[in-house]
Image (cartoon, rainbow, N blue to C red; front, side, top):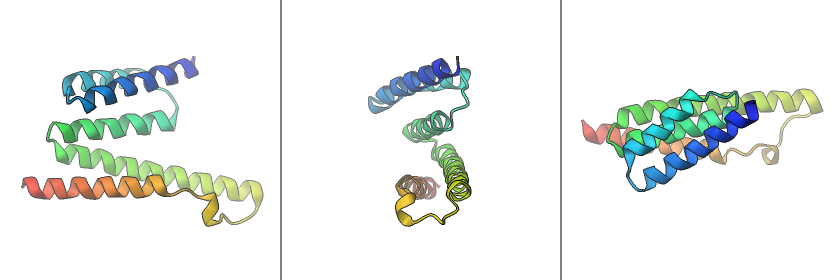
Length: 124
């Protein structure tokens, strides 16, 4: 049952992104709200939904809300990456090398957060 919920959330997120790309913001929000109604225990689905909500709020000019959500995403990704490193260390008893850690998504999150921070400053 959990895998079905996960697939439904992925599908709704795809629909949301398609509508965000066309600036059909109300339809995008409709699908994002549906994602919230089908909670699943998948961190990736949760992060994708949060990211899409941030895009939605940015599209409708609510930059502070978009920035707050992006801040949540950064915290969740940092926590997730930290737990992965600890798990890897416990399993292999070796320290992670730079090759073992892919931080590009964290860099993208911080870049998005900075851009939204600038938008919030410019709106004032």
